[in-house]
Image (cartoon, rainbow, N blue to C red; front, top):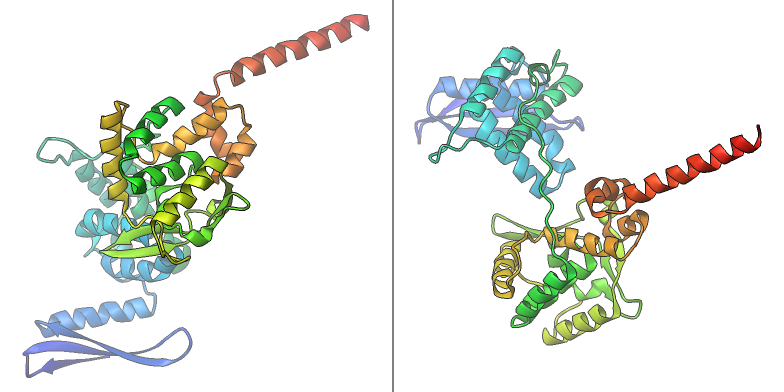
Length: 366
């Protein structure tokens, strides 16, 4: 590396030469440093990162962590993680050398988070505190697992907050039908919510659907992608999980409705999005329709719960429901156990019968 002064601007720049992981010689530079000291400090940090030496600041190691991890998660997931780190972690630990951060420093940081209050006197939720701490723990874990940091101070300090199971709310079939009737004044909204309710797909999956995803002869829709907006750009990626890739069987009436909707769009191409709206549009329409229909307000995501509730009431098994909605059977059982009101009673009755059978058998053998 070398540090130079740009006489034209009066600022300093660093010329950085290095060998990448392929063994290729590369060169880059960083301009705009106000002083030579700042340029040299950046040069020192860059050398440490290139050599994977932990004698660097937490801020510099986060850049290493970002390079290592960013391409392994969805962009929307990384944006969420990155926001938490940049707003809640780097302001506190950014300038500290990562090897010098101890458990007591993490505890002091935790206490600041716990003491925070906004203008209304409200602190961070317990769930959010757990999320923030999990991000710090993940960064230190990466340093321990791959860069020989002796131990994870965040893990040693212990977590804060608890993960609170989100309250599950849902509509009955009658409530949904009232809502759907209120949506009929806007065909796009009506058909969008029909897909959400009767197929139990995620809103991002809905917004990524194209005509090519439907096979009306087989009465199916293929879920293979999801949509989100990031910094004003429309982004299509693979679904949330591997199991989320699935083919959903549609009821005949819904096939007819979607064919009607596609015809309304005139010359739409097979790979063009059917619902060119955003998640905020769906939320707005949800509010409008619920108020107009006189039904309770639930989240767009809760329509998924409403679909599962309907299938449970129709008597379908956990395995069958899990296959349709893209979840493991165990997860369906855990999340929706309270919607199986007769299961515990049936278990108790069968256990009673089993006990009596065995008792009779033993009695005959005496």
